[in-house]
Length: 258
Image (tube, rainbow, N blue to C red; front, side, top):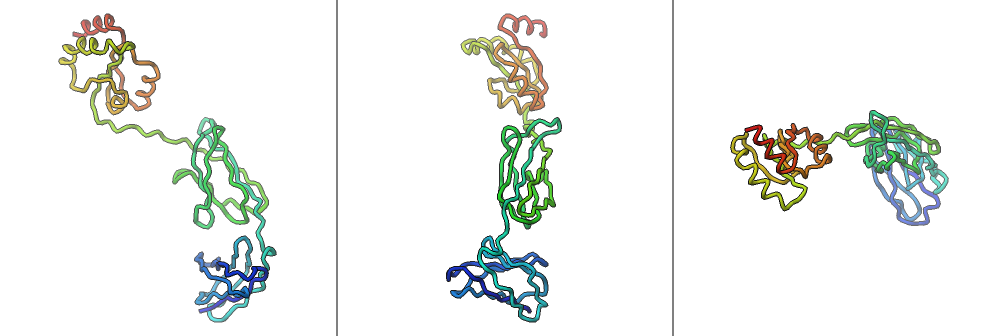
């Protein structure tokens, strides 16, 4: 197997970590500098490699898998990659409305190196990026790959994404939602509808909007159910039977349905 050896100048005599990256196979080896800045990586298969010490890099190293390759001198600060590139853009839905609070991830060499969240206007940004090929993703659903940066360019990447609202699993066939504008009238409402409920399809009767979302059909009873609750139940894909009204109106409707 081959080896790559070299020396770093300007490391300050510290025992610092250094790494060797295979550009052929993608693996990474970690090592440490000696007091005089020497490093050595052994048991290497034939291929192309690069050495990285923090932000300093040395590229174009090759080994034939048998002999020792002596790397050129790496001077701290001289091989430093520029990190002035920026990826920014806007997350939006199919109607071009901004999608806020979407969590984006930035991938480099198959690793997530940063995350960001879109603002109220759908905009996001990843800054201070070095040369390389990147990917921006939103979960496993949306991604844009092969974004090439040179350490100084600015790239705009807009993403089409609309989170899918989860529909509650329907565990009830029917729910009777009872809400009065005056809570004190709730017992009277229960007494009024009790005989009628006995003739209707089985299902719990109660005051829980959350529980109602888990029903296939929701019967609305009382005068305290606002349109916002109607919209919530429609979003949960509930079939609605609207019998809203005050006690007198409700008594009349129940009599008509008997």
